[in-house]
Length: 184
Image (spheres, rainbow, N blue to C red):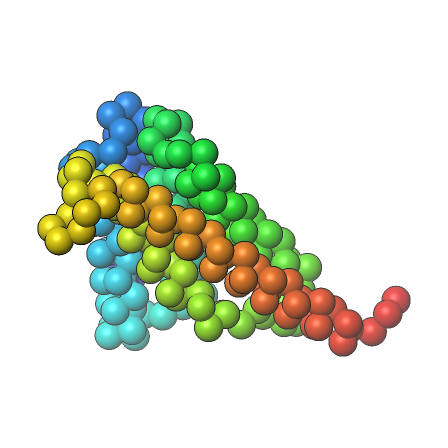
């Protein structure tokens, strides 16, 4: 399946991205890999739908690739020390939420699935933009008086706030679903 091959290639980009981030920190090469992986995320999904290659395996690979790209970018930037304490804490919260939601999904088993929160996709986009801006070597963006890095950190904080909201939503969904289960 072509779309799964694109996803696997996207997964292979996380290794050089991590090594660039921990060795050199933010810069054009890391940003290029990060944005390339993000673009391939869009491409693999469109290919899967266009070629009618959607599958449970493809969906799982896509989710793993998404989570690993985020984890890699955050860990690389944390290891290199590119963030303020607030942004680093918020970034760790974003990673922790993925672990918690995976655990909630496991608690529900195959009987229930968690519905995406309405703010899930905006949260992902804000997180991606924040990570990208913190990787950019530009001091400032045209027409904006704040540095690109500071703007990226602000977006990471906003993404963390949205992450907490989605986490509460998923937790409530899990509790509701588990209450409907018969007691042993």
